Image 1 (spheres, rainbow, N blue to C red):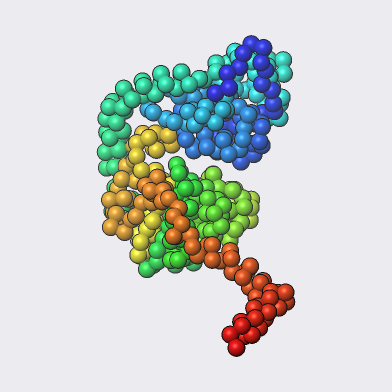
Image 2: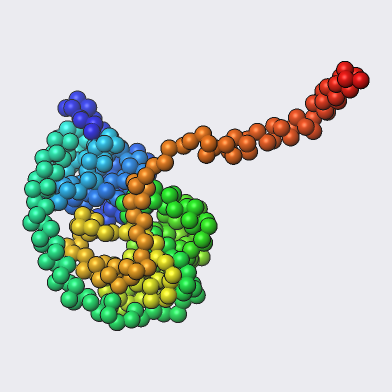
Length: 377
């Protein structure tokens, strides 16, 4: 991490938002992010790294040691400094302001805010503390999962109430993409599968943007529509807004402002749960998921203290489910020359044809032919 001394200042314009996902939509390279994000998760850290921010100021605990989150380390490894401030000072920051940061203070217009750099030493200490807490944390997580499972079991027992869809899922391969950890690498690995089998592509919120970034058009977008771009919402995919069981759907307001048609599906659970359950109940032949949330750290980073609905849905659809999350880490095949011969041949083919059709080359071949005719008469 960049360690600031008393004689070194870090200056820049800031972007401020209480929602990290919302802030990442608007922040520009070399700006400073001001957030309120307890236990910065890996996806948020990756977003800041891709946005090329200059620094991160956090009005919450960057890492509290309750579980081994890795977002802070990702930022430090990328040489992006992190500064923790008092939550009460958050209101002092306004997007567009220019600030100056020293080792222990931030100058914001006429205010000087005390800050504490978050260092590798801080991360190491809190990570060890988190590992010591894993047993008790897992115990609470299991208890919460079992408690909520009894309340959410209707999600898998009863048939999902689905509005009429124009996207046909029956007897199809379906790929459900969530913008979770490792989604880019995993999507690249299954690119050939998608090109060969032409499965139905479902983007869960920001998963739709992931598909578009890799050159694929989503057939269906499901979610509360809070982390998907306007571009994705206008791409022509069928939109299915995940609403609360009582019918409330905050995401509908955004879609109405964009004038894009959508339908609503009311259910408990997460949007990725609904995507898998929808594909299963519509008769999909195979359901491939990537970027989905599958373990305790995933859910704690999302602020969920259990995974009841996800556990139940995976139990129901498991016979048709192939989880591709992390497949990119399984095996990185080395490039071998014998597997590259066709590439070499394709590169040489235009040169060979150029020689064949070039008049000088053809004259050279005629000369050789005449020479041999004379020599062997």
